[in-house]
Image 1: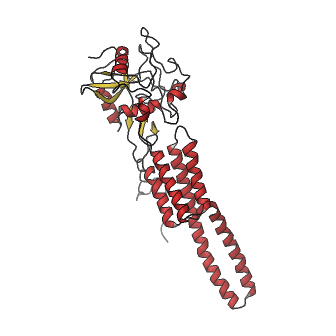
Image 2: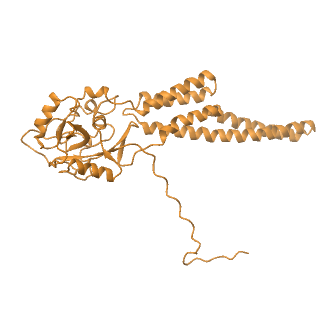
Length: 357
């Protein structure tokens, strides 16, 4: 049977630290992110390219500048931005290499023709070919000066490194947390301006997530989304917020109605997750004593604790007025583009078939 959420919150926070995650204890529990892993691999590649002299200094400098920009200047980490810039860089280099290869093929033809003209003492033709050769060489130099010089095998290695991180993404209505997992931007039904669903039991919440190809968040996922990135935790980034901003009940005797989703952007996390503090309690997949399920985040109902450590537990079948949820999901490949419809063998109405001559 469910007990009073505020009393349970205090009990859990002070006597059950394994369930009630504090902002301090969570810092070392958050797993490293895929962005850091990708940057580490790119650093090794850059070092190897320089050591083995298998790429131009321009190429290495451009790669290093991308690494430095996303390693030190982006908070929260912009994993998708890094992938997008690397993808653009690779595409640019691939196109440039194709152009350079075509120019080198043409150069070989011109050189052969020039040698033939000089043997035949055809000065006019030789001068014309020398002019073409100079133009081709200028084109090759322009391409290679932009960083297109890299050994083909090492270029394949470069593509392979970041392509393995590009296969997965999140649906548009979810936030991609550092390449680790996806979480709904809003509380269920995950629509801006919709009032969050309440009076929801754990089985109902889990079933609603499954129906959308998602799942309830684990406690660690929920805590990570609430705490924010390691470079700037949300309780530091949002230090000026108030219980009113995030719709946490102001005292034990008063309850407030939940805000529509997205109504208070000042309470969004730095990564764009809305209302994870306050508004409604959120079911997670966390268990307590193999019987109860853990809810997180507090609500507008008689609860003034504005903290990522705010937790309580309840019977899975409990359907309390301020119990809601949001869904999480594992990153997955984007759905394939729909195939183009096959052309119809029958002419459309109003068209004229032209007989073959």
